[in-house]
Length: 314
Image 1 (cartoon, helix red, strand yellow):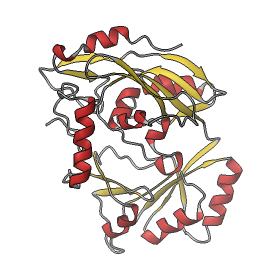
Image 2 (cartoon, rainbow, N blue to C red; image 1 turned 120 degrees about the vertical axis):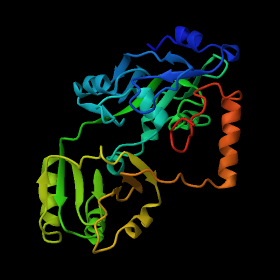
Image 3 (cartoon, rainbow, N blue to C red; image 1 turned 180 degrees about the horizontal axis):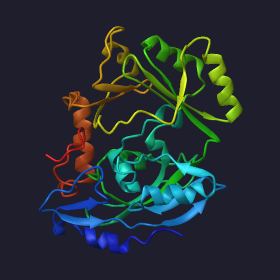
């Protein structure tokens, strides 16, 4: 059983309907004034715990989805916003993973199949309903991080995962980047490793006995490991950018703590208190972006004026 997208497609309309903007809970990007707004269907339509998939409308609250999956011992790798909510479609359209990407994988791996309304008001399907689908081009992953400019997502089939039996956060104060490297090298798939250059927060997930054993092995190497209730509060670090993980050590010196940055070690995401300059895009990459946008959204009427690099309206 899938989502009926007839009314949604009609609300988007064809190219004669003019510009349109898809909205969810507006926890990620605020809709500009003067642009017609449409809303994707919501609801959970098919949950298959044995197949580890779920079918839901793009307008479904992430909280609602996680609650339903939690009842069967599973979750979906979608990040919440600071409001502790947001919609499925909004999370996919923004494309920002959460701080658990190191252990849980990239956000795009969550999306198996998508049905969307294109620039001309037609319903189009991309991807497949199984985890090991390999037929055709993997078009649905293009929609992760597209901010709605390639089409308006109406229905998704998402990959689910078992809830970890144990998820524990630890903190090390007055340390160095060498401690961060030690965690990355000695812990099997840590869920997250965060640092500001001197302090480190890290999360390990799995069987409780395995987590205990991991900490016992780290204790002789890393002194003063303290278990804490969770990660640092990143709400005061609203800006982010991505670099190669090998460049992160260059951000900090061994003597100086940069209180304006928290980085995700092993991933390359930098969280900062102040906005940073958008990265320069190589001309060949920019040309590919332009060609894809032209093919999917030739008149630019879907979510017009969005900057795909910053995610802000221009």
